[in-house]
Image (cartoon, rainbow, N blue to C red):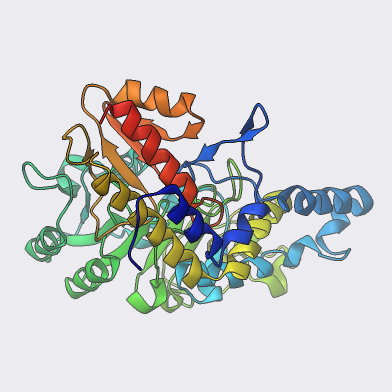
Length: 422
């Protein structure tokens, strides 16, 4: 389709959008009775309308049954987890038994590193991206120290080339090959939080495995945003949060993936808890940990059915919309945004630089605006546009497929152009 830079064309795209009905499934922030433009799904997704009712069902069950709600009622909490992994499998490209819904992102990554970072002799290095989200930096630093090792000796960071903002896939693969005899783990983000760069996870995994290393991913900015095939790519482990693109609420319960080849390995190190004990004999309270032979075996503590309910309300929408359609529209929205920036003269003005690679992205587009960025951000805010400011001079916007529209993208570009005085 030939794109056009006018409001009527954006309205035409909205009218023909097969996912347009899903916007009505979300509560859009309003000011003075007017819906705002919410481009912050990469930070906190909006609330599905069905979330409150789903959580209320759990509260009603708690009221009626007390602790017996784990076993009684229409949806016993003890089996709640089984309802989550099937729709989640379609989101991340995994087998349902390779998934566990638990904890939060960094907690899960620490638990997974217990199992999948096993330094032996000179094979003790961890290769990761430079300037990853600070949580991942702190995760690796403190986890390595806890093992009695020096992070400066262990952690190898791959950076963009001088004068570039993206990390080239070729440079990642070269770094893996250069350190192939000393790598214990390749640990990478699926999408860079700052630039929005989508990394070639399949190629990174293949190179890491060929080098004799384990490979894991932080998918905080990838799950629900970009195509994922964790099982088919042969990824060893991964984790993500569900409050961003997965719309499961602030502080939502996270998720983790463990490839099925590890489910029956009795020698694999892990931190264990009662909730990960095999279900058939869990209530016998016997000594000696026997894990569930699935990713659920990495669970530690009793999960909150209230958080499960919020997660299921959101995942049901993903199942109804279908991941193929979601991914297609997400790409289309960000493509349209980049098109408008080009044809309206915003890019040619030299007042703005797009940090996000056009051929390797999800929903997020990161805009570098030197000197006037903070003032431009304030004008966007005053115009009712929710965006994200990152010091010192970057605005991140993420039009997402389930509740954002092409008309909102068009409107954003008009406000941005005016703010830049282009």
